[in-house]
Image (tube, rainbow, N blue to C red):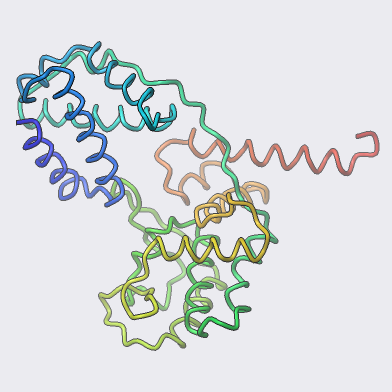
Length: 303
């Protein structure tokens, strides 16, 4: 049955591919919608034989259904859903002996990648300093928030990467070994300001942390979650008057953009961010060029 195969696929992604919980959720959601559509479209139980016999037209009909439903998906979301289904069919082929050549004939919508939306250096520093100015926050919580945001901006980490650090990782060394997307490892230099922020947090945290436990803790002692960091940043940008684009991930964008503006080369930034493709890193040149043109128009006497 298709849903049994779906369960096996998700277990494969979780245990063999080490996919993140967010990826598992997105892929599982897309595949469940795919199978449900096929059940209605064909009016029968979906088996491995049915999945092998699907035509490119039926897969396109599923994409059209997503595009025209009650909550139509954007081209980017459609592309991501199709990518999930291609991965599912690749698993069916390799692991379960149920190939389908028609999937390769389906093309997703054209997606034009947007330029990253970083914050300025002043805004980044303001976001990092703001938790310590909140009189309603306990000192250790403010120190924790400053440490997490400093990691995102100072090392270019994703939230999940910052929150994956264990107590045994601190005091931080001069370079961190980070396990990123796709289980790819990269080395990230650690600035003195980052180490100092972590040390300040550890000096105030009221919990005893075992070496193999999460470094960053929530108010009641459990592991700090990405959603809590996002909520904190939402509060900070409201107090600072920053746009909605000032998210935790924007600090990672700012790390790359500010390095590029200071003269770092794209290959080095690619390594620091852990991008698989240089084309992903090249998006930051759009931001840097925009800043350059803005400065030119403001400073040139004939502008």
